[in-house]
Amino acid sequence: MGRRYGLRGPWVLRGLGLDLPAHTVVRIEGANGAGKSTLLRLLAGIDAPTEGRVTGRPRAAYVPERFPAALPFTAAGYLVHMGRVHGLPTAEATARAHMWLARFGAAEHAATPLDELSKGTGQKVAVSQALLAGPELLVLDEAWTGLDAMARGELDRAVAERVADGGTVVFVDHDPRRLAGSVRAAYRLEGRTLLPATAPPADPGPRVRIEATCGPPAVLPPGLPGTPEVERDAGDPAAIRLTTTAAHSDPLLRALITARPPWHITGLSRLPAPVDPSAPGTAPPRDVPDAAPHRAAVGPVPGRAPVPVAEGTPAPGPESVPGRARTAVAPARGTAAVTRYQAALLARSQRWLAPVLLYAAVLGIGVRAGQPLLDSLGYAAAALLPVAAWVTRLCVTQEPRAARAVTAAAVGPSRAHLASLLTGLVCALALGGAGAVIVLLISEPVSTDRTVAVPLLPAALAGALAAASCALLGTAVGALCARPVVHRRGWSLAATLLGSLLALVADGSPAEAAVTGLVSGSLTGAVRVPLLPLAGAVAVAAAAAALTSRLAALRE
Image 1 (cartoon, rainbow, N blue to C red):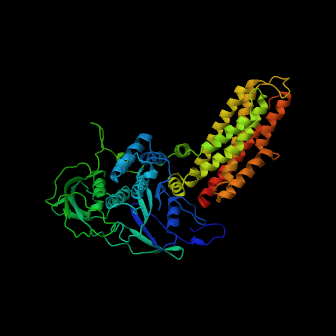
Image 2: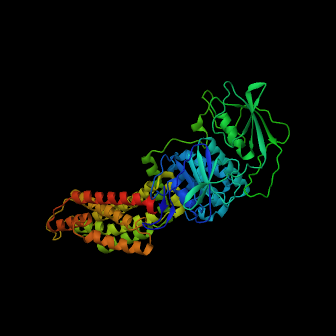
Image 3: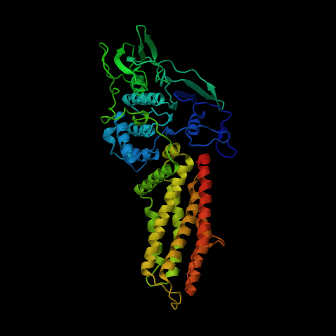
């Protein structure tokens, strides 16, 4: 595949081929500006390649290089939203959010607003959102930056867990010894393409020996984390000894216990090994006794809460263990979760206040008690179109770019953009409905010359459909006048004003036809239900949504 920015921009990557198997940790190296972040965004599905393609991408999660704090949520609130975006039920998303915050030592900050967190704690939230739903592809762009030693070690263990569960981890980090001993493949970006690189040497830190037994045929599960050294007991073919680093001990234990058939852990001990505490990125040792090996039957993995199992129920399978991969999220459910997240983002940011006040002011000036009903409904519908365009622009641009990248990795850039448009449309329809109700309550159901009575229910239907037509066309204008079509704010604002005006006055415009039908009908007292303009507005809005959603992966 290849990637460049702009139609004639220089190629950042070209002629690049890469295969990412399961149970693999892949390191990407390269000089500043070589295209490492661009490659990670392509792998995570945030951007689409300019040429070539990416196939077989599983469910992905992404940790950006700089996680934004300008989100109006608490740490736990944001994680719950992202858990739902990844397909988790609300209760499970809440439980996992608190679990991961506790694992990274940030449990006391669960109720703290994101913009009040320190950089290190904010990075813990960034890493937690990526691990919530057990992604099959985990993409880490300098994810260890800003984390303390304990959190770095916990992230090392989380990476090992993902790999043990069959996942793939691709990462970039400035520390050449990061995940040493776990990296199965390393590549260096040079000359716009990938070249094989030397994997970092094995982790020199503390090592742990695990003794286990299993019934025949005593076959180890594939892809054990940390690539442990395996010794068979000559006197007992069902017994083995595995030696691995301390960072991989927990994931290795869990892989053995949850295997089918399960392995029984009979011993656990730390082996003496030289440790360099000053080495950057060295994971801290776990609290394993240095004395004689600990003998135990099968039990919970050290450092993890046991999975509750009711009496008489079978042992938990892979899907019931926290952090295990889940099945793919249904598209409709994913879109609904992202739309809910976008709506909460809009409501909490209070950016909706300005367009709502503008619409209320326009109605207050132009709609008077006792005026002809159809005239007032047409005026309210026409005033809604620029407001809908404004709200849509707010929804498309309200999420910081790094946060949008996280969302796009979870559900795809097209669906993330579509959710923004749906949020703007729903907000505009709600405003239009409220305006129509106010008009119905204070206007007089008569013709312009007050000689003909206007039937109330058909007029209400015509007004509602005209408002819907204007809301749809305003959403289309807002979508076409914001990113990914127009990136500069000044040009975007000017294009929105001009587009809204043209949509209201241009011949053949669905909004112009719907409003004109109401106003002209008021002259004779005849109600014209704008079904054809509504169909045209739906077609225009659908085309704009399809176009901009497609461009979101290419130009976002």
